[in-house]
Image (tube, rainbow, N blue to C red; front, side):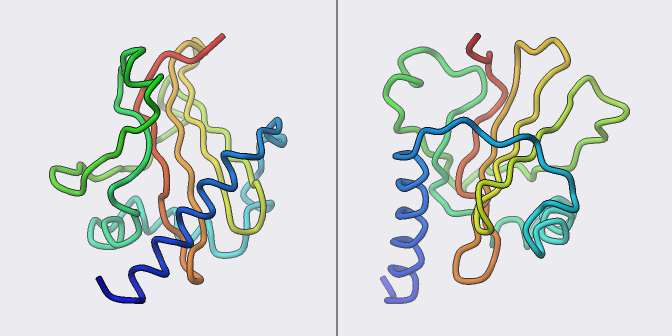
Length: 147
């Protein structure tokens, strides 16, 4: 394993663990103008360029599969592999039954929640800036939301 790769993974894990240890209520959903510099451009390219997307995901990607069972959720150790990854495309929120909430945690972390209009289903993605570039560091597929 190269030193550059080791430093990158260590930094990503540090950011992920640090965020997990600080349970605080999320700030109000952000608007595009409140997003960290460069995030909007990254987000657009992430959803339109498959090579760029694969290069900006930290695999194995921490998260949860869609429709996760209670045992998978309780273990909290699921990771998405790079093999078989299906490209994420952008949503047309005006034409779908979903809404998006973006939370800027700080200048290096953005959390996105995509929620069905019923409020019962949703998915979560966390993006972090690592070594000056944005990456997807966490993804929960479509699941029932806790009430």
